Length: 191
Length: 138
Image (tube, rainbow over all chains, first blue to last red; front, side):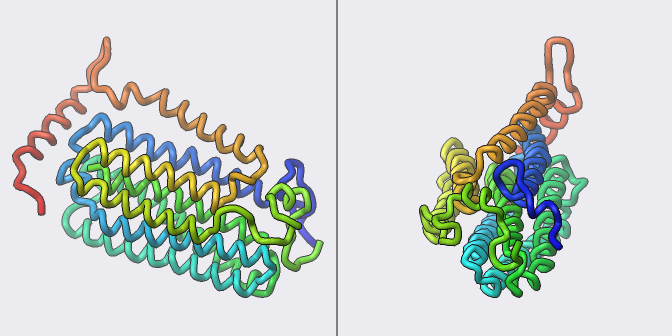
């Protein structure tokens, strides 16, 4: 017995895929609003680019994390390719690589935050650091959420079941990567 | 509907542009797209090292837009997705710009015809003076 949502489509695309795009659209307003708020304040406060503000962020750590997320996005789309070919075990393995990339991202970010906080750059230090921790923190929570979903999907996908869900979590993951693509220059490069 | 492999319904599957419904995606390879993304990342990191402000902005944000386009079109397959998805995303962006336009004048400016944000002006003055007198960072 399958859920009704998987047996009908009013828009020409599968209901699950439409639902993920709907989530992504709402996330555009959430993250876009946060980043736009930061941009507004950044343009109104030129001191945001100085040493005690964005000047203290570690560009190369941010760049490494960008590399990690791009690589995990690549493994996510390769997982989708395997699912499309009907190869559940391969798709599941690539989903694991994707989740692994997310784990590396979170671990590097934890180290980065530990270093920054121990140097006195806390969330209450100034407005830039408030934005930094809130934006990167909400993003990291989305990374963790994506990883959890991938681990939940893993057993079924490995058993060649519900392979369409590989694309769905893949689309969500690519969006998480997209947000970081904009967060990285805003927080680490524009200083 | 079978649990095996493709649980898409045919309308959605056809709309996704697969040849024969079960073949590989056509278009630029994922590997080429990934390599392009890595090269663009390297350029965006190297750009600020040159030290020209406008060049930094172009390499950082211009490249971010290009990378976002590549991920959205090649990895998320937005270029072969049904149009309703693009409309949905554009509607979200429209709301975003609406919210931005509504508050931007009050946040980005610190004085208007009949008002002045003294606290923000003082903070900018304090922080820029402090930065100007601070010892050089590493």
